[in-house]
Amino acid sequence: MESDAIREYGGALFELAREEGAEDAILSDVRGVKPFFERGSDFVRLLDCPNISHRERNDVIKRAFYGRINEYLLNFICLMTERGYAGSIYGALDKFIELYNVDHAISDAYVVSAVKLTQAQRSALASSLSARTGKKVNLICRVDPSVIGGISVCIDGEKFDGTITHKISQIRRKLDELSVN
Image 1 (cartoon, one colour):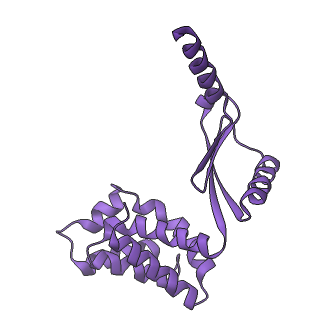
Image 2 (tube, helix red, strand yellow):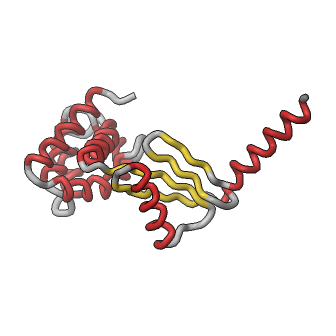
Image 3 (cartoon, rainbow, N blue to C red):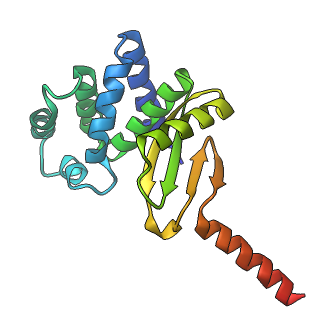
């Protein structure tokens, strides 16, 4: 469930980025810094530490990111930390990406395959999904050898599972139904 802080701060960052015409630059920086703010990360624990003053926390943030990310994003991270929301920064960055994608008619497609997809395969898959959704598609690929072969795609709440593991599971289920009757 999305907290009010995540919704409000992520939305405010997106609106600021849009007003300043910096959506693309901030999106790129958001994707770059997001891993630092994953739940339970050492960086978030440091920013949440009650023994460290707000000024020292801001100094840590600035040393880590100053000159490397957009100034609005840097100030956003400092503000959320000052207000006690360091643990919600990751969610707010996700919210920014979600709002950006909606505004630009982009869908994220989460793809799992047994082996790394070639650029040609990625392009063909993105084109096919784009034709199906009417949106630009951003592929987020992950390799999982346990799927044996084929691919699984999750996009806009729909899952398409063409993995061999899934097909074997379907066959096994049908055989179980036959043997029960």
